[in-house]
Length: 327
Ligand code: AVJ
Image 1 (cartoon, protein in one colour):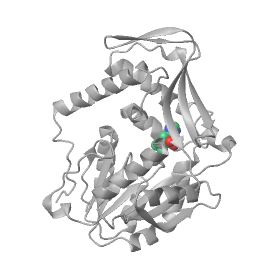
Image 2 (cartoon, protein in one colour):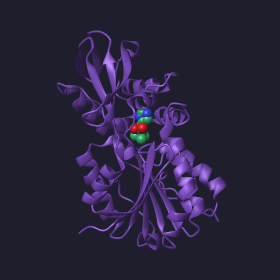
Image 3 (cartoon, rainbow, N blue to C red):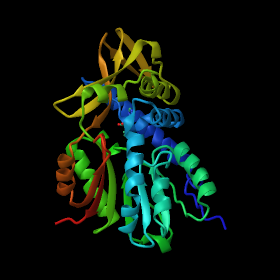
């Protein structure tokens, strides 16, 4: 029996154009502000997802390999706290590679629900998991973190284990992160668990190269956003006239990625014209970095108790095992 159900096949053409409308509205709004910005959620078209996978293998990009080590070291503890017959719900699942550590450690999962904005990444992960774990039921959901999860009756009431790895939570400001975690808790249900990967504050000499690597993969990832706008929104960005930048904003405790306009220029997107000054920045991503206690306090504010938290031996990255227990 093929138990790898998919909800992707049932998406209609209308869903895609709604998504494109949202992309268009978001890009136009972001570029119309006095301080231009673009949302990092649009990085992940097929090429962007593939470039992100390349980033995870760069020598400078420590988060993915470090989190993988932490998860391997503590998978048994995570599994031991997981109720039999649980659903594993993953937010921003991408390639689902790290998830295989949990999927193999937790013997009695009812199903796996990967949620991601990239349908290409979800489909690739679904195919790989169907081969490697043929008995696992997989229900991919295309959408952002708060997308509706539509499940068969026998699964809808299962206990849920949320998994939010990769320090994707770092894309949000602190208050937005607390709000999102709280909403996730309400969706997952009281006394649900959430395992979250969180990148830690460290020397900017380590942080900055992780977002500005020698091979230029992160630069290509950032600039691909302009390529996507050119293709999907009929834009005419000249990619040679923008440069990738990664800066450490100490006050906000975050890495910021920007695209720098190298000269005064005019860009057309759909029926609109945008002016860029020489040296003007377009802010494309925030990646907030936490201390352990900082994040534990944030999780508490969002309604979670910390059952456990783990770091690697160099304290580069952390994984937090939380339970939703709002007052
Ligand atoms: C996927 C959001 C966790 O912030 O480290 C990697 C994205 N951007 N290099 C991160 C990213 C540039 C990544 N997250």
